[in-house]
Length: 322
Image (cartoon, rainbow, N blue to C red; front, side, top):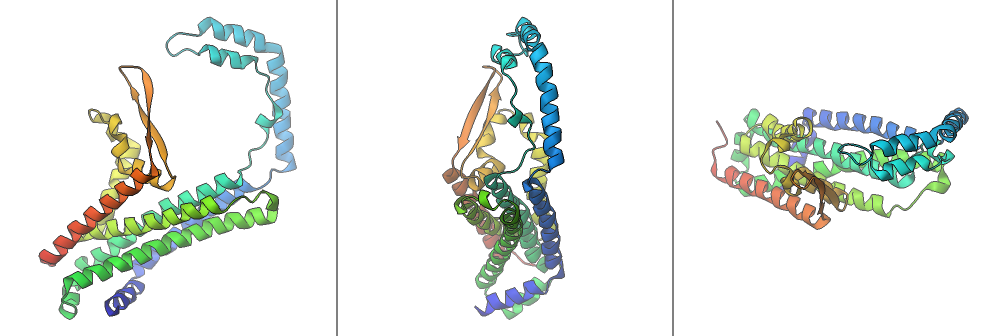
């Protein structure tokens, strides 16, 4: 317990860690503002504009839908052409509700708030975990610290425990800020539409678990690389490479590997199940793949455990100085 208290004190005096937390909360406040804005009841002007657009389109549809249907059917059936079902939709009269100003319902808003807390708070927890351990190597303080507490197992455990507590605290702060702001907005402007808190609370629990795991991942990578930047940059670079460059599509059988990608299992864990898939070029059809919450949870636990174990072995056996 004395080591844990000492590590907590060391964490509290790291200005860079607090800067990470404050920047994260500032971004969370902006996200919260976006969610609150989307939850606001539509103004009279917005309703009037939506009604005007509906009436214009309805008049155009009433005059032209027969011709639209005939033109559509003339091209239907070919590769890349509209289907018969697409053409049939031309005969369906538009309804005013489809043109009304969109207002975010309670369930969608809370899901967005909790997902945002998990992703934004998780990234902050990853960076904080990597920084907390990486700074020890960068400044050489880990060697000095081990002269006062030579039990490397106890030192490693205390540092990882503090990383977990900090990661969960950051996620909780982001979640409370975003969910609290949204709940306040509903309470003032749409009190009768406040829905069930059960699923948002369950998502918050999963987000806290993610905060603990990614904090451990960041701290473990920092130990393995003896570097803060590498500890945080490796997973972030992977995410950016997959998101912006479509690396998976360049690998043979890459699309079929989606079930085993970290991001797919991460989303399955957070959303309590996730359906992805890939396009089968031979059959020319979409092949759905469902990833259960159990698989996502197991995947993340195994990945976290493997990184922590590798970091522990390295911390126990490797010289802490370069």
